Length: 215
Image (cartoon, rainbow, N blue to C red):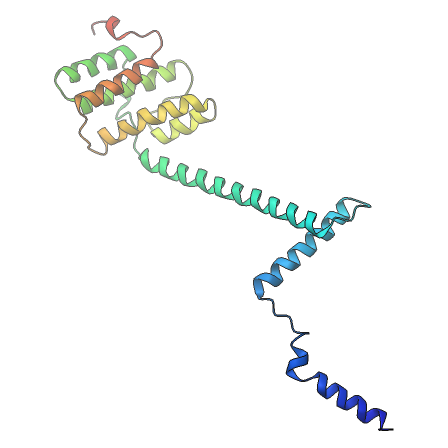
């Protein structure tokens, strides 16, 4: 009989050959190893949370995929909100709508009267400005926001958003066109201004354009 030690060494040498070792090698790539480790961790976590319950591999894997999907969607939604906020802040330029304290002392009716005057002169950009200031002062009178000379339209939008998101959205649309007309130097056409005036007057409550008193 051959030497048992020699036979064992020969067998080990055979097993060390490539064609045998390949069956023992882990051929998974980094992502597969990472994913398998995550699944194993999650199955252990479920077993700890649900005392006495041994989740099957299929159940744990499905639940894990669902949770990852939910987290992914929430992350996408969060990114969308951040990007929209940045875009809106850029649209509402860092300028104060009131250029002087004197303009804040004007009444809503006086700004509307000035808007009407500029409309008749076909100066629609300036008419847009006074329509917007009338709305801004009206919101101030209703205590929906606090108007100050140093505040920007972004400040007003953020203030309104904390109280009434629907009103804030309407204000944003008016403020965006105001900034484009006044600071963006965009020429406002007659039809565009008329649509703007209609939207603005909807927020002026009982203030009727036809009842503006002579200043």
